[in-house]
Length: 332
Image 1 (cartoon, rainbow, N blue to C red):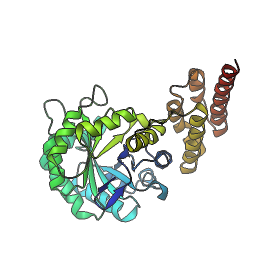
Image 2: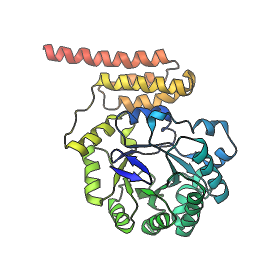
Image 3: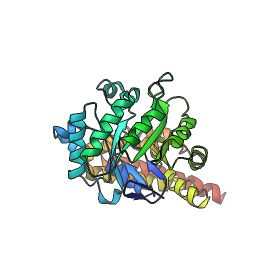
Image 4: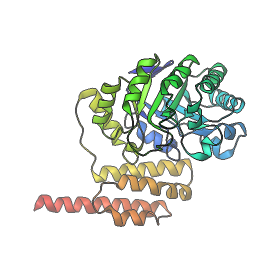
């Protein structure tokens, strides 16, 4: 258990803020599998300031998700501060997180996301401005550097701490690496030794054993899980259990996977509408189907689904087929 400002987390496992994925339907599903903290996908500061309808919808938080960190991004102090103040006063988020890690060009060319990694002075200035303008704890998610020649992770983290940031999540990759190659856990250890605020390690945590190893090798206070939780909220539950008890829980059955996928779908429909939710759920369904034998035909069919009933029938049909084959093997 550790605290971010005055917010107490019940365990060390944190869901990463993944763009295009971490809406309320997904976050709540992961939260119910035991995450100590869930993070919302990044939201544009200008979208908040201009009250863009799509952006406003992204600020929705179900009380059952809490504690929750809501992430904003931007390159200009004025709009970043205004957006942070709106989140502070008008949402039920517990923590305001600043994105300092997004590597995609459309973000970095606006002097936002990973672009900050090149300038510790800007980090100090921007984080200070946000901290002074809000009451909620302010945190930062960052990468270790822009590229191999510009790794200022320690200086950047120290700048966040001096500015009043309450915690840092550090992804052990550079902006240039994107999501390729291997995450550098040594830099996580180096940063942890250089700051006094909580550090959450991120990068290449694919199994509960990876999470334990990251904590032991780096000394970080928490582990952030991103892509490994896609279609697999059991990764969160199994990691929490492994860290707390040392026991490795079984992987879910196909029926369990399909049932949770349908629950996720229904929450997405309630959040958006059936047409939008079903199309968005196609990618999630593919993640839930990962590792299931004979999923190729179903996965292709999922991409043709336009209604809830079509998708649910496919998923239930696959689960029934698998159960039937397993029963035949058992009888045999």
